[in-house]
Image 1 (cartoon, rainbow, N blue to C red):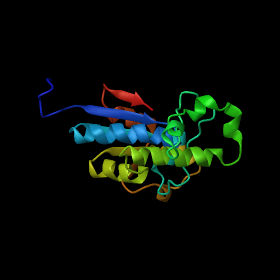
Image 2: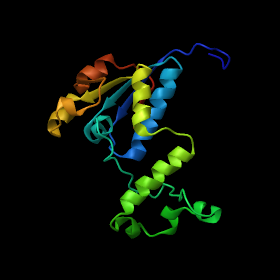
Image 3: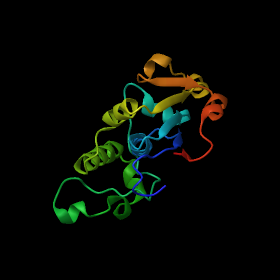
Image 4: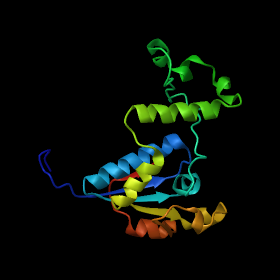
Length: 175
């Protein structure tokens, strides 16, 4: 296939197991991009990843604690302050203080908006509109005590064996 080829074919399968806001974005960005390029996209949500497909997502947070690779820039303030990587400048114990996870979440959301990214709920809706097939792991749903009616519209339920039986042979991502 060449760059000029307007018709992109193929499939993408993503297994999503993380339940935080910063881990939700890559999955939905990759899925919506692939679907917009006419790929068949399946996302299998398991364990903590189920948090990302609940009807209510306001509880999703970002935790820079224990994630030294995460750059934390302030979305407000003078330019010199915005350029500082707070996660590298501040000791990790700082992120354990009350309210720091909320601050990091707010900063992450602001940074995403300032860089032209839509809120997570809109990104999830876009995936549904583009035909992305989203499946919640039935075993994880039961083990974690969720009810089917707690999940967003458009999500299916299946076990891991069913998922692997219908998922594509190539191009699987584990997020």
